[in-house]
Image (tube, rainbow, N blue to C red; front, side):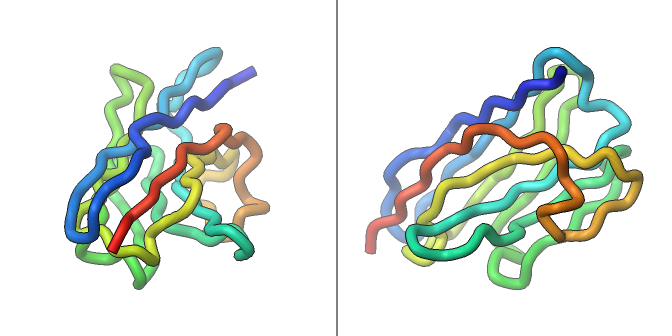
Length: 124
């Protein structure tokens, strides 16, 4: 059974950058689409970005487009979310998730394996 572990969260000032990592163990990430979601206190979990199984296609929520970049390194069984120009509204727990579908949408229910999350706090 695959296990996902996120890392890289922390406290950063507005305008700063962080790079989140999500490493899988127990199964290769190769050939599986992966997504990042986030959940702020008191809010529902929301889609952030996804990457295709091949890595040649990415899709971003409008709120992060142009600021976040999703990449994958299948040799390391790891995906990354580079977050630049962070804003206080980016504060949330960030989760990576893997889908068994070839071309999942941004709906959380299309992802069946989740990490435990890493917390990102952006101060103003």
